[in-house]
Amino acid sequence: MQKKSVRYLVQAALIAALYAALTLALQPISFSATGQVRVSEALTVLPFFTPAAVPGLFVGCLLANLIGGYGILDIVFGSLATLLAALAARKLRRWPFLVPLPSVLFNAAIVGPMLSYVTGFPMLPTVGYVGLGQLAACYVLGLPLLYLLRRYDKILFRMDP
Image 1 (cartoon, rainbow, N blue to C red):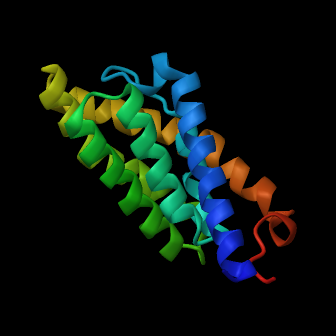
Image 2 (image 1 turned 180 degrees about the horizontal axis):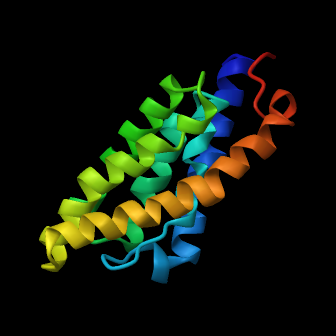
Image 3 (image 1 turned 60 degrees about the vertical axis):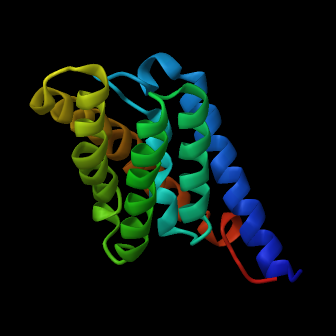
């Protein structure tokens, strides 16, 4: 295996572990239909720096949802929302301020209705709660993280051997 692929795999694994650990450590606020703020969603800015963040975020979300989520629907749709958001964030690298936006939109549009279905709470407020929680995690925490990491991205995320 080449050094570049090992580095990619290690980065993805570290991001997955960090996402899952943060989500599960903060479980009371990570899994709620009426005020969910997944602090780990701040990490959805990492595709700005490395393509390894895309599978890393997906696997981390999948693991967190397997252990502490709302069952099979959360495992499938919650993880799908994170994967789609990570792919879109990667495409928005030219506009750093927009990088957190896909996570807000995909989670509100996918996780919100799923949580409404699973919990029986009204859909519109649930979508709103998820969207607001994502705004907090992705813009209040994630965007400053992106700007902070930009200072060190050559060291932290380089992919050359």
